[in-house]
Image (cartoon, rainbow, N blue to C red; front, side, top):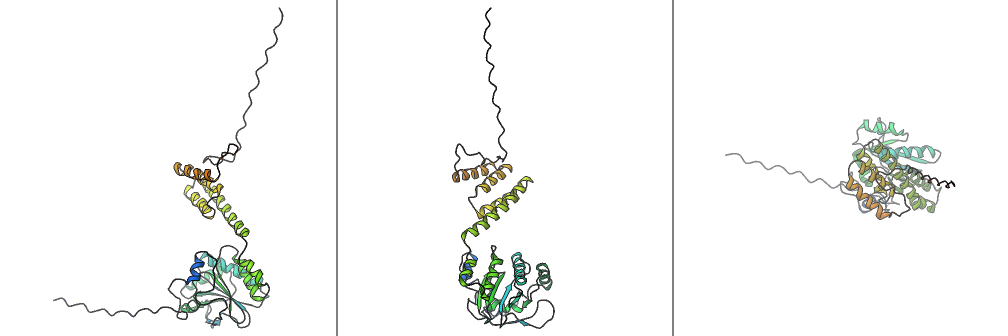
Length: 317
């Protein structure tokens, strides 16, 4: 008889990561879930809210064998940047933070960039060289600090006062992030008041609209260049990225119709033209620029027919 298989020992359940037991594997808490959806509710890290005092954890340098140092100052405003060494947004945030650090070099501000120890040393070194960082770069061994604060986004910047209380929580945003970081530091230093900070944190609609318009125009120009090179799929992706920012942008819709027509997708081009007519009905005096093959060239000049010669009067014979 075949021997019965012995029961395999069961592994003990993995403990849930709490605020001080490493990085949590659970999803973000409610305020962070709202931030991820793009809404303006921001209360702080998952385990540290605005106004909470932070523990001053000792962290070793990311490169070299130096002694661990506190990531916060007990006497100055502190700025700390959580980053991923291989993510574009993190590298962009590091460049912006370093620029502000140099601009405010005469202010009493303590800086630190913080990365997890799960990233390879060479990856960290490449990020430091690429961004030109001169602020201390510290290593969070075992993601202790990540878990204690509840960091859920890369990159994220925190600002504390001399009492180590969290004053500002700044998850990455594509628009005006550098202005926001500098404003948060100046607010912590007392250089701007609460009202000025609120204007920075919530810019007016005109500023946001201008930024969207600039991005749309940049992608439209890219789509036109790709269309000239007959790279139809790439041109279509570029123009559709414009329409995600502004779904009713007539210039982008006309360009999309032209790309579809040039690539042989006639029915889809006609559907886009129908959408254009719904948004802007064609009037008799309007130029026919919505047609897929339309160009910006002026129409050819028409020649007027010469008048017929008048008959000469008959002579008396």
